[in-house]
Every structure is written in structure tokens, then in C-alpha cells.
Amino acid sequence: TMPGPSAGCPVADLATELACCRLCALRLRAERNCQAYTGQTANWPPDAAASCSICIGMLDSALLDVQCESAAAKMAAFEAHRFTLNVQLPSSCLVRERAAWLHAKSGSAQDYVLASAPAAMGTMARDPEAIVDLKEVLRWIFADRLSHLTGMTPAAEAPLQVNILAKRASTEEESRELDVLQSLLPGPPKPKRKRFFNPGAHEVQVGMTGDFGQVATDIYSIRSVIKALGDPHSDALIMDSFLCPPQRVMATVQLSVGIEHSPVFLAGSYVKLSRQLPQTAWVIDGARKCPTSVQELIEPHVIEAFGADLARFHSAGREDVDVRMLGHGRPFMLELRGAHRSTLPDHRMAELQALISESGTVHVRGLRVCDAAYVQSLVKEGEEGHCKDYRAVVRLGRDITQAELDELASKCPLELAQLTPMRVLHRRTHATRPRSIYAIRAVRIAPRFAQFDLTTQAGTYVKEFVHGDFGRTVPSLGDVLNCEADILQLDVLGVRPKQDCMQPPPARPPIPE
Image 1 (cartoon, rainbow, N blue to C red):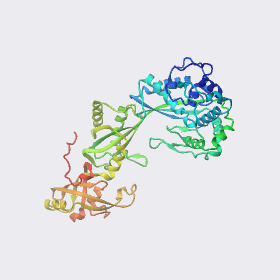
Image 2: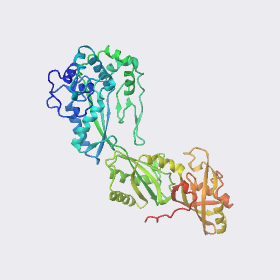
Image 3: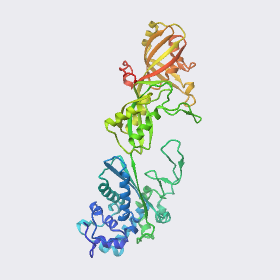
Image 4: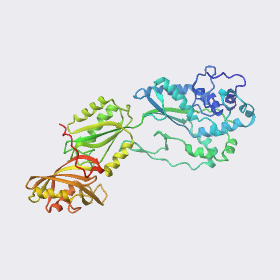
């Protein structure tokens, strides 16, 4: 318990002199014991913290009680054991804090402000860097109260984010205070566009985007104000301004607390059994070409299971709408935003996989929570670090023998030059790309029909390799066999690391029923 404001108490005297609250007086006295800010203060009378000249009401106990209870109620909707606090304050608070410290060092205040004090009270900050950061004090108070209200533990990094945003009630007052340093500050920043997360949403342009996605109203950024306060001329400008001596404020602060869960990343592999199913929604000129997609068959179940708001789908490449994805499946990842759960028990994850598989066209395997780094590796390796196994049924322009088909293996690896296929020219850069066919294993199934198992470099257009795309892929399978070749159906049998490209394909699991 903090001692009461007895005669000659340095903290009480300093609070009176600076028209500030007790906690701000402790901050100026470089008191770094968090219990001094969170402990009981029964012996202290109300100190008009709501109109404090330094924190402008942010450390008012009544305001903090309301915000902590509101935050705790919101946090109860999340399945979490730890939380992290993030604080965003008006930049004008830094100027007010410096003004109070400068006034405390000068004039009549100097006699008792710099005097020795009980150890529990600390000593007056001898330089601005020693002042206890207002953000830190807010973190201590919120961490203490929220941990008691929710049973959760505060941590430096946790999935559950508690975002504390303070804004001045009067932007005119804030502008006037920041204008004290106008000669040291850069010009006002240009507004930034903030794009919403969900694709297709409109954009807003109403000021600077804050740390937590809200639109901040600060005229100058915190960084620019900190830089200005580091200028040797800043103290003189503040001392000569209306901020010295500090005055209690009439329009205080608007404090809000938002709760959000950091993105949850879920990895797995999908098997696609339909030849009429795109990976993502297929829309041309506003019209859907297929009623659903792989993404749309997976996402709703996952979003519901994790209590998320929305999801983003990433995969290691994609197959055409008429191509099945078999074998162990294609690696994919879902980025869940606004999730209320960080993970699921193993049995719940198995139930989720079974629920997705009820569609009969898409089956999911190996569903698990992963980290954000998997996104980058998935996208990069999908283009560069994988090889792919295909099975194609091909109609040939002449009778073919098994002996001729067996000779194809000796021609591998086969180097191709693929000009952007005509069917994707509207959405791909017109360029010639080198690609490799690592292995060909062929079986004759009729005089003019054969089944080809191919191992290719990621990014190879297999259909164009078969028929040549009017000479845009050289050489084509037709060129090698000296006849026309046309592909009838194609399956992806697997995706594996590039270093295994010269090895026989691994055993494949049975096709799901």
C-alpha cells in the first residue's frame, strides 16, 4: 500500500505543483516498481486524475475500471490462456510530459522536487529518458487488472492481442500543443489508403492508419515528435510556450480497447476427385463457371470450427478445373483472421477432416496448425522447390508399339522451351520459359492410345507438352514420337521435393471412396 499524502510527501507535492495525477508524479520521479502503479491506494484521496495535465485522464482509475471490465468481457469469448497488450497514444502526450518535467526542474518546484525522498518513492528523473513511459504504466495496470478478471497471463507475445487506443477528445487542443514544436517537425503526412483484408472490399482514405488498423487522428507521427524532442532547441521552445506551467485539461481523452486474435495458420493437403471443380471460385465477367470450388468446400467448415471471421487460401500451385489431384494431395494452407481458437484437439481435427470429405469431391489429409513461415515456403516451393508427377491418357496419330514407348525413358531429362500457352495468354506474361521433363514411363493401352506417367519441373504446362500448342512448346510429345498427340485426361499424382525428381515416384495411397 502506498503511503498517504502526508506533509512534505514528494509525490503529493509534485502532483500539486504540476496539476497532475499521482501516477504521473511517480512517473516523473522515475519510479519503476510496477506495484507502485497497480497496488492499493486506499490512503490516497481522489487526485482529479481525469483532468491530469500530463496523461490527460488516461490513468483515471474509474476510466480504467470501465475499460478493463469491457475488455475482460470480450476476452471471455476467446479460448486462450495468455494475452499481449499493445498501446497507441496521442503524440501530444510526449510534449505535455516534457513540459511538466521541464517545469519541475525550474522555479519554485526545484526546492522539493529534487529533494531526497523515501526509497519507495524513487528520485526525480534527472533527464527525460528516465521518465517512466506512459505506455509502460498502462501495460502494467491493464495486465494486472485483466489477469485478475480473466485468469489469463500477460505475455510479451501471445495469440490474443489486447489493443489499447487513446485519442484526444479535442483535435484543436492537440494541434495547438504540437504547434509548439512546429519549427522542428516535418510537414503533415499525406493520408494513406488502408485496404481491407477481404478481397473486393472498398478502400478508405481518412487520415493516417494506426497500429491496430484504426484511423489515427495524430497530425504528426510519434516518431516525428520523438525526433523533434531530441533536438537541442526543443526544451527552449516548450519552456517559452503556454504548456509551462502545465494546466489541467477540460477535454480529456477517449480510451478504447479492442480484442483480436493473431492469424491462425492451418496446413494440410487436399485430394480433388472431380474433373469439374476449380481450385478457387471461377468467375468470368461476373458470371460463375462452376457452382463451387476446392477452396469453398474447405473454408466454411474450418472458419466455423475455429470461430474465425474469414480465411485466405494458399497452395503449392494449382491444377486445371478438369484435372484431378490424387496421391497424397496438394499442400495448402489457410490463414484464419479473427479466430476465437488457436488450435483444436486431435479428435476435433479428425472430425473436421471427415466433415470436409463428406462433399465426396474433396478430401483433406494431415490438417494441422502451423506457423506463418510456412506460407512463404509453401508459395516459394510451389514455384521453385517441387517436382510433380502426372498421369496422362493420350490419343496418338498412328499405331504405337510398347518398344517405342519404352525408348522415351532414355530421352529424359528432356529440356523444353514453353512459350506462354494460348489458353492462359490473357492472364500470363508472354514469355518463353525453360522447363524439364525428368522422367517418362509409358504403357500402351490400345493401338493408338497410351498412358504416360510423367515427372516434371513445377510450372510445366503438361497439356501443351503433349500436343505442342501449335508449335509454342518445343519439343512436344508429338515431336518426339513423330506423330500427332492429343491429351484425353490428366491427373496429378503427387507433389514432391525437387531433389527427388530423378527417383521413382513414391507409393500412392488409394483413391478415397
